[in-house]
Length: 179
Image (cartoon, rainbow, N blue to C red; front, top):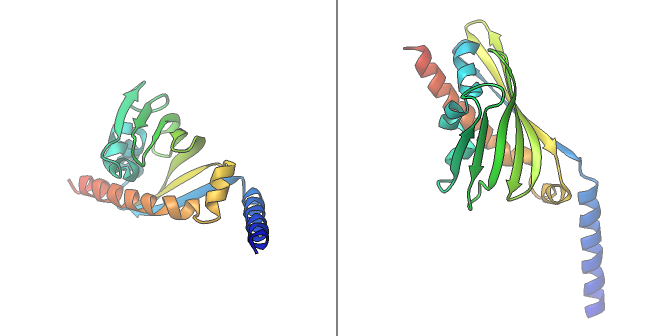
């Protein structure tokens, strides 16, 4: 009986390991929102990491996190570093591309709780008196991330935070636009 249980357990472990190995090697999460403001009013909140922190949903989720800034105040070369013993972990976010009122792209380096890299972008598309903002994040998945992906998707893990962040940004930008 014990041998049968061990064989079944071994088969389950092998199947789960194979399923994890067959998962996609990359992830991409995208959320959008339409804000009642021109791109210039939104751009300042995506290109300036200090301003980004006022609506960043990840920065609000861990009160133990500390943040430091390096490089220029805004634009290419500006850096945000975070560290926490809590759920936020540690990492670096560096502005690698900035096209005024159109696009801001960041390189992400995650140190813990799981090492990895990714890219995050904010794309702004004018729509009359409004602007469509597209928040995207993509990167490679380690084997551990693939294994976790069998039970929870990156889209579900990050998508809700993106939606909250875009909601906060909408509130901030639209309030500014009326003043």
